[in-house]
Length: 295
Length: 272
Image (tube, rainbow over all chains, first blue to last red; front, side, top):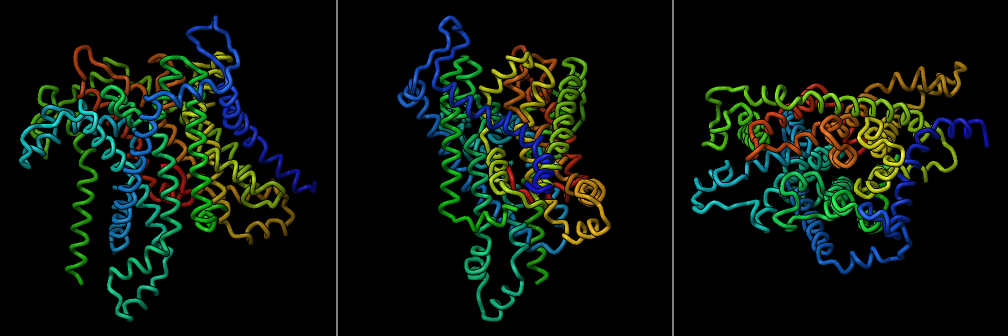
Protein backbone atom coordinates (compact mmCIF):
# COMPACT_ATOMS: atom_id res chain seq x y z
CA UNK A 1 0.00 0.00 0.00
CA UNK A 2 1.33 3.39 -0.92
CA UNK A 3 1.19 6.34 1.43
CA UNK A 4 -1.71 7.82 -0.56
CA UNK A 5 -3.59 4.53 -0.42
CA UNK A 6 -3.30 4.45 3.34
CA UNK A 7 -4.37 8.08 3.75
CA UNK A 8 -7.31 7.47 1.42
CA UNK A 9 -8.58 4.64 3.60
CA UNK A 10 -8.05 6.64 6.81
CA UNK A 11 -10.12 9.54 5.44
CA UNK A 12 -12.83 7.34 3.97
CA UNK A 13 -13.07 4.79 6.75
CA UNK A 14 -15.26 6.61 9.33
CA UNK A 15 -18.06 7.25 6.82
CA UNK A 16 -17.77 3.79 5.29
CA UNK A 17 -17.82 2.21 8.75
CA UNK A 18 -21.03 4.07 9.56
CA UNK A 19 -22.61 2.93 6.30
CA UNK A 20 -21.54 -0.66 6.92
CA UNK A 21 -22.80 -0.61 10.50
CA UNK A 22 -26.18 1.06 10.11
CA UNK A 23 -27.13 0.25 6.52
CA UNK A 24 -25.39 -2.89 5.25
CA UNK A 25 -25.34 -4.87 8.50
CA UNK A 26 -29.10 -4.29 9.07
CA UNK A 27 -29.84 -5.71 5.61
CA UNK A 28 -27.94 -8.89 6.47
CA UNK A 29 -29.68 -8.99 9.84
CA UNK A 30 -33.08 -8.62 8.16
CA UNK A 31 -32.35 -11.60 5.93
CA UNK A 32 -31.34 -13.69 8.97
CA UNK A 33 -34.39 -12.50 10.92
CA UNK A 34 -36.69 -13.39 8.02
CA UNK A 35 -35.72 -17.05 8.42
CA UNK A 36 -36.87 -17.11 12.03
CA UNK A 37 -40.06 -16.93 13.98
CA UNK A 38 -39.87 -13.77 16.05
CA UNK A 39 -43.09 -12.47 17.55
CA UNK A 40 -42.58 -9.74 20.13
CA UNK A 41 -46.11 -10.30 21.43
CA UNK A 42 -45.35 -13.94 22.18
CA UNK A 43 -41.83 -13.98 23.60
CA UNK A 44 -42.40 -17.46 25.09
CA UNK A 45 -42.37 -18.93 21.59
CA UNK A 46 -38.71 -18.00 21.41
CA UNK A 47 -36.81 -17.35 18.24
CA UNK A 48 -36.68 -20.67 16.35
CA UNK A 49 -35.35 -21.12 12.85
CA UNK A 50 -38.28 -21.70 10.47
CA UNK A 51 -36.59 -21.75 7.09
CA UNK A 52 -38.67 -20.14 4.39
CA UNK A 53 -41.95 -20.35 6.29
CA UNK A 54 -42.29 -16.56 6.50
CA UNK A 55 -41.82 -16.28 2.73
CA UNK A 56 -44.31 -19.07 2.17
CA UNK A 57 -46.83 -17.22 4.30
CA UNK A 58 -46.34 -14.08 2.21
CA UNK A 59 -46.63 -16.00 -1.06
CA UNK A 60 -49.93 -17.57 -0.01
CA UNK A 61 -51.39 -14.36 1.40
CA UNK A 62 -53.97 -12.58 -0.73
CA UNK A 63 -53.29 -9.34 1.13
CA UNK A 64 -49.61 -9.53 0.17
CA UNK A 65 -50.30 -9.98 -3.54
CA UNK A 66 -52.87 -7.21 -3.49
CA UNK A 67 -50.39 -4.88 -1.76
CA UNK A 68 -47.82 -5.78 -4.43
CA UNK A 69 -50.32 -5.08 -7.20
CA UNK A 70 -51.27 -1.73 -5.60
CA UNK A 71 -47.62 -0.75 -5.39
CA UNK A 72 -46.81 -1.73 -8.97
CA UNK A 73 -49.88 0.05 -10.37
CA UNK A 74 -49.20 3.16 -8.29
CA UNK A 75 -45.59 3.17 -9.49
CA UNK A 76 -46.58 2.75 -13.13
CA UNK A 77 -49.27 5.44 -13.03
CA UNK A 78 -47.23 8.05 -11.19
CA UNK A 79 -43.98 7.52 -13.11
CA UNK A 80 -45.68 7.78 -16.51
CA UNK A 81 -47.62 10.90 -15.51
CA UNK A 82 -44.63 12.52 -13.82
CA UNK A 83 -42.29 11.99 -16.76
CA UNK A 84 -44.88 13.30 -19.22
CA UNK A 85 -45.73 16.36 -17.10
CA UNK A 86 -42.08 16.92 -16.18
CA UNK A 87 -41.03 16.84 -19.82
CA UNK A 88 -43.72 19.36 -20.71
CA UNK A 89 -42.69 21.64 -17.85
CA UNK A 90 -39.00 21.37 -18.77
CA UNK A 91 -39.71 22.20 -22.42
CA UNK A 92 -41.74 25.27 -21.45
CA UNK A 93 -39.03 26.38 -19.02
CA UNK A 94 -36.49 26.00 -21.79
CA UNK A 95 -38.51 28.34 -24.03
CA UNK A 96 -38.68 31.04 -21.36
CA UNK A 97 -36.33 33.91 -21.99
CA UNK A 98 -36.93 35.54 -18.61
CA UNK A 99 -38.16 34.58 -15.19
CA UNK A 100 -36.54 31.13 -15.02
CA UNK A 101 -35.50 31.77 -11.42
CA UNK A 102 -39.06 32.60 -10.41
CA UNK A 103 -40.34 29.46 -12.11
CA UNK A 104 -37.65 27.31 -10.50
CA UNK A 105 -38.46 28.64 -7.04
CA UNK A 106 -42.18 28.13 -7.58
CA UNK A 107 -41.88 24.55 -8.80
CA UNK A 108 -39.42 23.70 -6.00
CA UNK A 109 -42.01 24.49 -3.35
CA UNK A 110 -44.24 21.42 -3.87
CA UNK A 111 -41.11 19.25 -4.01
CA UNK A 112 -39.66 20.65 -0.78
CA UNK A 113 -42.82 20.58 1.34
CA UNK A 114 -42.98 17.51 3.64
CA UNK A 115 -44.90 14.57 2.12
CA UNK A 116 -47.05 14.43 5.24
CA UNK A 117 -48.19 17.99 4.54
CA UNK A 118 -48.89 17.15 0.90
CA UNK A 119 -51.00 14.17 1.96
CA UNK A 120 -53.03 16.26 4.40
CA UNK A 121 -53.58 19.17 2.04
CA UNK A 122 -54.75 16.92 -0.79
CA UNK A 123 -56.94 14.98 1.59
CA UNK A 124 -58.45 18.28 2.68
CA UNK A 125 -59.01 19.32 -0.95
CA UNK A 126 -60.82 16.05 -1.72
CA UNK A 127 -62.56 15.61 1.62
CA UNK A 128 -66.26 15.00 1.09
CA UNK A 129 -68.97 16.06 1.12
CA UNK A 130 -68.38 19.71 0.20
CA UNK A 131 -64.63 20.07 -0.25
CA UNK A 132 -63.15 22.36 -2.88
CA UNK A 133 -62.74 19.54 -5.41
CA UNK A 134 -66.36 18.46 -5.10
CA UNK A 135 -67.46 22.09 -5.36
CA UNK A 136 -65.54 22.41 -8.62
CA UNK A 137 -67.03 19.17 -9.92
CA UNK A 138 -70.51 20.47 -9.16
CA UNK A 139 -69.65 23.65 -11.04
CA UNK A 140 -68.59 21.46 -13.97
CA UNK A 141 -71.95 19.76 -13.90
CA UNK A 142 -71.11 16.51 -12.10
CA UNK A 143 -74.13 16.32 -9.87
CA UNK A 144 -73.56 13.60 -7.29
CA UNK A 145 -70.37 14.26 -5.32
CA UNK A 146 -67.98 11.35 -5.08
CA UNK A 147 -67.01 10.11 -1.63
CA UNK A 148 -63.37 9.83 -2.61
CA UNK A 149 -61.95 8.13 0.47
CA UNK A 150 -64.78 5.63 0.94
CA UNK A 151 -64.45 4.15 -2.54
CA UNK A 152 -61.79 1.52 -3.20
CA UNK A 153 -61.10 2.82 -6.72
CA UNK A 154 -61.75 6.54 -6.32
CA UNK A 155 -59.35 6.74 -3.37
CA UNK A 156 -56.46 6.26 -5.81
CA UNK A 157 -57.24 9.53 -7.61
CA UNK A 158 -56.14 11.92 -4.83
CA UNK A 159 -53.17 9.65 -4.04
CA UNK A 160 -51.84 9.64 -7.59
CA UNK A 161 -52.60 13.33 -8.13
CA UNK A 162 -50.83 14.34 -4.93
CA UNK A 163 -47.76 12.29 -5.81
CA UNK A 164 -47.64 13.70 -9.34
CA UNK A 165 -48.06 17.23 -7.97
CA UNK A 166 -45.22 16.78 -5.50
CA UNK A 167 -42.63 15.04 -7.66
CA UNK A 168 -43.14 16.39 -11.17
CA UNK A 169 -40.91 19.39 -10.26
CA UNK A 170 -38.02 17.04 -9.50
CA UNK A 171 -38.41 15.34 -12.89
CA UNK A 172 -38.76 18.72 -14.62
CA UNK A 173 -35.56 20.04 -13.05
CA UNK A 174 -33.61 16.92 -14.04
CA UNK A 175 -34.90 17.08 -17.62
CA UNK A 176 -34.35 20.84 -17.77
CA UNK A 177 -30.71 20.29 -16.79
CA UNK A 178 -30.55 17.67 -19.56
CA UNK A 179 -31.99 20.13 -22.10
CA UNK A 180 -29.26 22.65 -21.23
CA UNK A 181 -26.61 20.20 -22.43
CA UNK A 182 -28.05 20.02 -25.96
CA UNK A 183 -26.05 22.06 -28.44
CA UNK A 184 -28.30 24.90 -29.75
CA UNK A 185 -26.59 24.79 -33.15
CA UNK A 186 -28.34 21.45 -33.77
CA UNK A 187 -31.71 23.22 -33.71
CA UNK A 188 -30.27 25.97 -35.88
CA UNK A 189 -29.23 23.42 -38.49
CA UNK A 190 -32.59 21.64 -38.28
CA UNK A 191 -34.43 24.90 -38.86
CA UNK A 192 -32.33 25.69 -41.89
CA UNK A 193 -33.14 22.23 -43.24
CA UNK A 194 -36.82 23.02 -42.71
CA UNK A 195 -37.52 20.54 -39.90
CA UNK A 196 -40.79 21.23 -38.09
CA UNK A 197 -40.80 21.79 -34.30
CA UNK A 198 -42.37 18.33 -33.88
CA UNK A 199 -39.56 16.75 -35.95
CA UNK A 200 -37.00 18.66 -33.88
CA UNK A 201 -38.55 17.26 -30.72
CA UNK A 202 -38.58 13.63 -31.88
CA UNK A 203 -35.28 13.65 -33.77
CA UNK A 204 -33.08 15.92 -31.64
CA UNK A 205 -34.52 16.63 -28.20
CA UNK A 206 -35.80 13.22 -27.15
CA UNK A 207 -32.80 11.11 -28.29
CA UNK A 208 -30.34 13.52 -26.69
CA UNK A 209 -32.45 13.70 -23.54
CA UNK A 210 -32.39 9.92 -23.18
CA UNK A 211 -29.76 9.78 -20.41
CA UNK A 212 -31.67 12.31 -18.31
CA UNK A 213 -34.97 10.51 -18.97
CA UNK A 214 -33.46 7.19 -17.93
CA UNK A 215 -32.06 8.62 -14.69
CA UNK A 216 -35.39 10.28 -13.89
CA UNK A 217 -37.22 7.02 -14.63
CA UNK A 218 -35.00 4.88 -12.39
CA UNK A 219 -35.04 7.27 -9.45
CA UNK A 220 -38.77 7.91 -9.66
CA UNK A 221 -39.66 4.24 -10.04
CA UNK A 222 -37.51 3.20 -7.06
CA UNK A 223 -38.99 6.00 -5.00
CA UNK A 224 -42.60 5.29 -5.95
CA UNK A 225 -42.16 1.59 -5.23
CA UNK A 226 -41.41 2.32 -1.57
CA UNK A 227 -44.31 4.78 -1.20
CA UNK A 228 -45.31 5.01 2.45
CA UNK A 229 -45.76 8.50 3.95
CA UNK A 230 -48.32 9.69 1.42
CA UNK A 231 -50.63 6.68 1.70
CA UNK A 232 -50.20 6.22 5.46
CA UNK A 233 -51.35 9.78 6.08
CA UNK A 234 -53.92 10.24 3.31
CA UNK A 235 -55.89 6.99 3.34
CA UNK A 236 -54.14 4.83 5.94
CA UNK A 237 -54.26 2.15 3.24
CA UNK A 238 -58.04 2.26 3.26
CA UNK A 239 -60.88 1.92 2.73
CA UNK A 240 -60.12 -1.48 4.30
CA UNK A 241 -56.85 -2.41 2.64
CA UNK A 242 -57.83 -1.14 -0.81
CA UNK A 243 -54.91 1.28 -1.13
CA UNK A 244 -52.37 -0.55 1.02
CA UNK A 245 -48.89 -0.56 -0.58
CA UNK A 246 -46.22 -3.13 0.25
CA UNK A 247 -44.27 -0.71 2.49
CA UNK A 248 -47.37 -0.09 4.62
CA UNK A 249 -48.11 -3.83 4.86
CA UNK A 250 -44.52 -4.36 6.02
CA UNK A 251 -44.73 -1.52 8.53
CA UNK A 252 -47.97 -2.92 9.96
CA UNK A 253 -46.56 -6.44 10.24
CA UNK A 254 -43.57 -5.03 12.14
CA UNK A 255 -44.81 -2.26 14.36
CA UNK A 256 -48.56 -2.90 14.61
CA UNK A 257 -48.51 -6.69 14.93
CA UNK A 258 -44.92 -6.92 16.20
CA UNK A 259 -44.33 -9.94 13.94
CA UNK A 260 -40.66 -9.30 13.29
CA UNK A 261 -39.91 -12.53 11.45
CA UNK A 262 -42.74 -12.16 8.95
CA UNK A 263 -42.13 -8.40 8.66
CA UNK A 264 -38.46 -9.05 7.94
CA UNK A 265 -39.45 -11.43 5.13
CA UNK A 266 -41.61 -8.68 3.61
CA UNK A 267 -38.70 -6.22 4.02
CA UNK A 268 -36.38 -8.57 2.17
CA UNK A 269 -38.91 -8.90 -0.65
CA UNK A 270 -39.20 -5.10 -1.00
CA UNK A 271 -35.44 -4.81 -0.97
CA UNK A 272 -34.93 -7.63 -3.48
CA UNK A 273 -37.50 -6.27 -5.93
CA UNK A 274 -35.92 -2.78 -5.83
CA UNK A 275 -32.47 -4.23 -6.23
CA UNK A 276 -33.35 -6.50 -9.15
CA UNK A 277 -35.28 -3.66 -10.82
CA UNK A 278 -32.31 -1.28 -10.54
CA UNK A 279 -29.90 -3.91 -11.89
CA UNK A 280 -32.27 -4.77 -14.74
CA UNK A 281 -32.62 -1.10 -15.69
CA UNK A 282 -28.88 -0.65 -15.81
CA UNK A 283 -28.55 -3.84 -17.90
CA UNK A 284 -31.28 -2.91 -20.36
CA UNK A 285 -30.51 0.76 -20.95
CA UNK A 286 -26.80 0.11 -20.83
CA UNK A 287 -24.23 1.57 -18.57
CA UNK A 288 -23.67 4.56 -20.84
CA UNK A 289 -26.77 6.32 -19.55
CA UNK A 290 -25.60 6.06 -15.97
CA UNK A 291 -21.90 6.31 -16.70
CA UNK A 292 -21.84 10.07 -16.90
CA UNK A 293 -23.68 10.21 -13.59
CA UNK A 294 -21.12 8.06 -11.85
CA UNK A 295 -18.23 10.34 -11.06
CA UNK B 1 -42.52 35.98 -32.41
CA UNK B 2 -43.39 38.30 -29.52
CA UNK B 3 -46.94 36.95 -29.53
CA UNK B 4 -45.60 33.43 -29.14
CA UNK B 5 -43.32 34.53 -26.34
CA UNK B 6 -46.23 36.19 -24.58
CA UNK B 7 -48.32 33.04 -24.97
CA UNK B 8 -45.51 30.97 -23.46
CA UNK B 9 -45.29 33.36 -20.53
CA UNK B 10 -49.06 33.30 -20.08
CA UNK B 11 -49.17 29.52 -20.21
CA UNK B 12 -46.36 29.30 -17.69
CA UNK B 13 -48.12 31.71 -15.33
CA UNK B 14 -51.30 29.66 -15.50
CA UNK B 15 -49.35 26.47 -14.90
CA UNK B 16 -47.61 27.98 -11.87
CA UNK B 17 -50.91 29.28 -10.47
CA UNK B 18 -52.33 25.77 -10.78
CA UNK B 19 -49.21 24.31 -9.18
CA UNK B 20 -49.21 26.65 -6.20
CA UNK B 21 -52.98 26.65 -5.71
CA UNK B 22 -53.01 23.78 -3.14
CA UNK B 23 -50.41 25.56 -1.00
CA UNK B 24 -52.33 28.84 -1.22
CA UNK B 25 -55.51 27.01 -0.28
CA UNK B 26 -53.78 25.50 2.74
CA UNK B 27 -52.64 28.93 3.90
CA UNK B 28 -56.08 30.44 3.36
CA UNK B 29 -57.96 27.65 5.14
CA UNK B 30 -55.58 27.78 8.11
CA UNK B 31 -56.73 31.38 8.63
CA UNK B 32 -60.45 30.60 8.27
CA UNK B 33 -62.75 29.79 11.22
CA UNK B 34 -63.51 26.07 11.51
CA UNK B 35 -67.20 26.55 10.74
CA UNK B 36 -66.49 28.04 7.30
CA UNK B 37 -63.43 25.98 6.41
CA UNK B 38 -65.27 23.83 3.85
CA UNK B 39 -67.21 26.80 2.53
CA UNK B 40 -67.33 28.14 -1.00
CA UNK B 41 -63.91 28.95 -2.46
CA UNK B 42 -62.84 32.56 -2.12
CA UNK B 43 -59.70 33.86 -3.76
CA UNK B 44 -59.02 36.38 -1.04
CA UNK B 45 -59.57 35.80 2.66
CA UNK B 46 -62.53 37.65 4.14
CA UNK B 47 -61.35 37.98 7.70
CA UNK B 48 -58.13 36.48 8.97
CA UNK B 49 -58.42 34.46 12.13
CA UNK B 50 -55.34 33.27 13.98
CA UNK B 51 -57.29 30.97 16.32
CA UNK B 52 -55.87 27.80 14.79
CA UNK B 53 -52.30 28.97 15.30
CA UNK B 54 -53.04 30.01 18.86
CA UNK B 55 -54.56 26.61 19.58
CA UNK B 56 -51.56 24.93 17.96
CA UNK B 57 -48.95 26.54 20.17
CA UNK B 58 -50.92 27.12 23.35
CA UNK B 59 -53.13 24.02 23.38
CA UNK B 60 -50.90 21.40 21.76
CA UNK B 61 -47.40 22.65 22.49
CA UNK B 62 -46.28 22.47 18.87
CA UNK B 63 -42.92 23.92 19.93
CA UNK B 64 -41.80 20.49 21.14
CA UNK B 65 -41.96 18.75 17.72
CA UNK B 66 -40.35 21.81 16.11
CA UNK B 67 -37.50 21.64 18.60
CA UNK B 68 -37.15 17.88 18.06
CA UNK B 69 -37.07 18.25 14.27
CA UNK B 70 -34.54 21.08 14.39
CA UNK B 71 -32.27 19.17 16.73
CA UNK B 72 -32.42 15.83 14.93
CA UNK B 73 -32.11 17.43 11.49
CA UNK B 74 -29.26 19.69 12.59
CA UNK B 75 -27.30 16.93 14.31
CA UNK B 76 -27.75 14.53 11.39
CA UNK B 77 -26.65 17.18 8.89
CA UNK B 78 -23.52 18.11 10.85
CA UNK B 79 -22.54 14.48 11.46
CA UNK B 80 -23.14 13.29 7.91
CA UNK B 81 -21.31 16.22 6.30
CA UNK B 82 -18.44 15.84 8.79
CA UNK B 83 -18.16 12.12 8.09
CA UNK B 84 -18.97 12.37 4.41
CA UNK B 85 -16.68 15.20 3.31
CA UNK B 86 -13.31 13.43 3.84
CA UNK B 87 -14.74 10.24 2.33
CA UNK B 88 -16.13 12.11 -0.67
CA UNK B 89 -12.80 13.87 -1.18
CA UNK B 90 -11.04 10.51 -1.33
CA UNK B 91 -13.60 9.06 -3.73
CA UNK B 92 -13.54 12.14 -5.96
CA UNK B 93 -9.84 12.99 -6.13
CA UNK B 94 -7.60 10.21 -4.89
CA UNK B 95 -7.15 7.17 -7.09
CA UNK B 96 -7.03 4.13 -4.80
CA UNK B 97 -7.86 0.45 -5.12
CA UNK B 98 -11.52 -0.36 -4.52
CA UNK B 99 -12.74 3.09 -5.50
CA UNK B 100 -15.37 2.08 -8.07
CA UNK B 101 -16.72 -0.66 -5.83
CA UNK B 102 -16.98 1.75 -2.87
CA UNK B 103 -18.85 4.27 -5.01
CA UNK B 104 -21.25 1.58 -6.21
CA UNK B 105 -21.93 0.51 -2.61
CA UNK B 106 -22.54 4.12 -1.54
CA UNK B 107 -24.98 4.65 -4.42
CA UNK B 108 -26.74 1.36 -3.69
CA UNK B 109 -27.19 2.22 0.00
CA UNK B 110 -28.61 5.62 -0.87
CA UNK B 111 -31.32 3.85 -2.87
CA UNK B 112 -32.30 1.36 -0.13
CA UNK B 113 -36.02 1.27 0.55
CA UNK B 114 -36.18 2.65 4.10
CA UNK B 115 -38.76 0.11 5.19
CA UNK B 116 -36.34 -2.75 4.60
CA UNK B 117 -34.07 -1.66 7.47
CA UNK B 118 -36.79 -0.69 9.94
CA UNK B 119 -36.89 -4.06 11.71
CA UNK B 120 -33.16 -4.49 12.45
CA UNK B 121 -32.81 -0.82 13.39
CA UNK B 122 -35.76 -1.17 15.77
CA UNK B 123 -34.27 -4.26 17.44
CA UNK B 124 -30.83 -2.61 17.59
CA UNK B 125 -32.17 0.60 19.16
CA UNK B 126 -34.28 -1.39 21.59
CA UNK B 127 -31.25 -3.42 22.62
CA UNK B 128 -29.35 -0.23 23.48
CA UNK B 129 -32.33 1.53 25.07
CA UNK B 130 -32.37 4.18 22.34
CA UNK B 131 -36.03 3.95 21.30
CA UNK B 132 -37.68 7.35 21.83
CA UNK B 133 -34.39 9.25 22.22
CA UNK B 134 -32.57 11.79 20.02
CA UNK B 135 -29.67 9.42 19.21
CA UNK B 136 -32.34 6.85 18.39
CA UNK B 137 -33.40 9.09 15.50
CA UNK B 138 -30.04 10.55 14.46
CA UNK B 139 -28.50 7.08 13.99
CA UNK B 140 -31.26 5.81 11.66
CA UNK B 141 -31.20 9.15 9.80
CA UNK B 142 -27.50 8.62 9.10
CA UNK B 143 -28.48 5.54 7.04
CA UNK B 144 -29.80 7.78 4.30
CA UNK B 145 -27.93 11.03 5.11
CA UNK B 146 -24.39 9.64 4.93
CA UNK B 147 -24.66 8.05 1.46
CA UNK B 148 -26.55 11.12 0.26
CA UNK B 149 -23.88 13.59 1.41
CA UNK B 150 -21.06 11.43 0.05
CA UNK B 151 -22.73 11.09 -3.32
CA UNK B 152 -23.47 14.83 -3.62
CA UNK B 153 -20.03 15.93 -2.39
CA UNK B 154 -18.23 13.56 -4.78
CA UNK B 155 -20.08 15.29 -7.62
CA UNK B 156 -19.09 18.72 -6.30
CA UNK B 157 -15.44 17.90 -5.52
CA UNK B 158 -15.06 16.54 -9.05
CA UNK B 159 -15.94 19.94 -10.44
CA UNK B 160 -12.85 21.57 -8.90
CA UNK B 161 -10.10 22.04 -11.50
CA UNK B 162 -7.03 19.81 -10.97
CA UNK B 163 -4.76 22.84 -11.27
CA UNK B 164 -5.86 24.12 -7.87
CA UNK B 165 -4.61 21.05 -6.05
CA UNK B 166 -1.47 20.79 -8.15
CA UNK B 167 -0.53 24.36 -7.27
CA UNK B 168 -0.96 23.57 -3.60
CA UNK B 169 1.17 20.45 -3.90
CA UNK B 170 3.91 22.40 -5.73
CA UNK B 171 4.02 24.69 -2.74
CA UNK B 172 4.69 21.65 -0.59
CA UNK B 173 1.28 21.23 1.02
CA UNK B 174 0.37 17.65 1.92
CA UNK B 175 -2.90 15.96 1.04
CA UNK B 176 -4.53 16.81 4.33
CA UNK B 177 -3.54 20.46 4.24
CA UNK B 178 -4.71 20.70 0.63
CA UNK B 179 -8.06 19.28 1.63
CA UNK B 180 -8.44 21.50 4.67
CA UNK B 181 -7.06 24.77 3.31
CA UNK B 182 -7.80 24.62 -0.41
CA UNK B 183 -10.48 22.09 -1.36
CA UNK B 184 -12.99 22.63 1.44
CA UNK B 185 -12.97 26.47 1.36
CA UNK B 186 -13.26 26.42 -2.45
CA UNK B 187 -16.15 23.96 -2.35
CA UNK B 188 -18.31 25.87 0.10
CA UNK B 189 -21.17 26.19 -2.42
CA UNK B 190 -21.22 22.42 -2.80
CA UNK B 191 -21.02 21.92 0.95
CA UNK B 192 -23.90 24.36 1.41
CA UNK B 193 -26.04 22.59 -1.22
CA UNK B 194 -25.33 19.26 0.43
CA UNK B 195 -26.10 20.49 3.94
CA UNK B 196 -29.36 22.14 2.79
CA UNK B 197 -30.58 19.04 0.97
CA UNK B 198 -29.65 16.76 3.86
CA UNK B 199 -31.48 18.98 6.33
CA UNK B 200 -34.56 19.07 4.07
CA UNK B 201 -34.66 15.27 3.86
CA UNK B 202 -34.38 15.04 7.66
CA UNK B 203 -37.04 17.69 8.25
CA UNK B 204 -39.45 15.82 5.96
CA UNK B 205 -38.60 12.26 7.06
CA UNK B 206 -41.57 10.31 8.38
CA UNK B 207 -41.16 6.52 8.47
CA UNK B 208 -38.20 6.32 10.87
CA UNK B 209 -39.57 9.05 13.12
CA UNK B 210 -42.90 7.21 13.28
CA UNK B 211 -41.23 3.87 14.00
CA UNK B 212 -38.65 4.90 16.59
CA UNK B 213 -40.50 7.47 18.72
CA UNK B 214 -43.25 6.63 21.17
CA UNK B 215 -44.64 9.80 22.68
CA UNK B 216 -45.34 13.43 21.80
CA UNK B 217 -42.20 14.50 23.69
CA UNK B 218 -40.00 12.96 20.96
CA UNK B 219 -42.25 13.26 17.89
CA UNK B 220 -40.87 15.22 14.99
CA UNK B 221 -43.02 17.72 13.11
CA UNK B 222 -44.32 15.32 10.38
CA UNK B 223 -45.24 12.65 12.96
CA UNK B 224 -46.92 15.18 15.23
CA UNK B 225 -49.07 16.46 12.35
CA UNK B 226 -49.91 13.00 11.03
CA UNK B 227 -51.11 11.86 14.46
CA UNK B 228 -53.32 14.91 15.10
CA UNK B 229 -56.69 13.79 16.28
CA UNK B 230 -59.64 15.82 17.43
CA UNK B 231 -62.01 14.66 20.11
CA UNK B 232 -65.01 14.23 17.82
CA UNK B 233 -63.93 15.21 14.34
CA UNK B 234 -60.84 15.97 12.30
CA UNK B 235 -59.52 19.37 13.49
CA UNK B 236 -58.83 20.60 9.95
CA UNK B 237 -58.06 24.18 10.95
CA UNK B 238 -55.32 23.18 13.34
CA UNK B 239 -53.97 20.50 11.01
CA UNK B 240 -53.62 23.00 8.19
CA UNK B 241 -52.09 25.59 10.52
CA UNK B 242 -49.55 22.96 11.55
CA UNK B 243 -48.96 22.13 7.88
CA UNK B 244 -48.22 25.81 7.22
CA UNK B 245 -45.80 25.91 10.15
CA UNK B 246 -44.08 22.74 8.90
CA UNK B 247 -43.76 24.17 5.39
CA UNK B 248 -42.65 27.68 6.36
CA UNK B 249 -38.97 26.87 7.07
CA UNK B 250 -38.81 24.74 3.93
CA UNK B 251 -40.32 27.52 1.85
CA UNK B 252 -37.86 30.02 3.34
CA UNK B 253 -34.93 27.74 2.50
CA UNK B 254 -36.21 27.31 -1.06
CA UNK B 255 -36.63 31.07 -1.52
CA UNK B 256 -33.15 31.84 -0.21
CA UNK B 257 -31.21 28.91 -1.58
CA UNK B 258 -33.07 27.98 -4.76
CA UNK B 259 -29.87 27.87 -6.84
CA UNK B 260 -28.01 25.76 -4.30
CA UNK B 261 -30.83 23.22 -4.15
CA UNK B 262 -31.09 22.88 -7.91
CA UNK B 263 -27.30 22.50 -8.13
CA UNK B 264 -27.45 19.71 -5.57
CA UNK B 265 -30.40 17.93 -7.16
CA UNK B 266 -28.97 17.91 -10.64
CA UNK B 267 -25.40 17.13 -9.53
CA UNK B 268 -26.46 14.15 -7.50
CA UNK B 269 -29.67 13.31 -9.36
CA UNK B 270 -30.71 11.49 -6.28
CA UNK B 271 -34.01 10.69 -4.55
CA UNK B 272 -37.33 12.39 -5.10
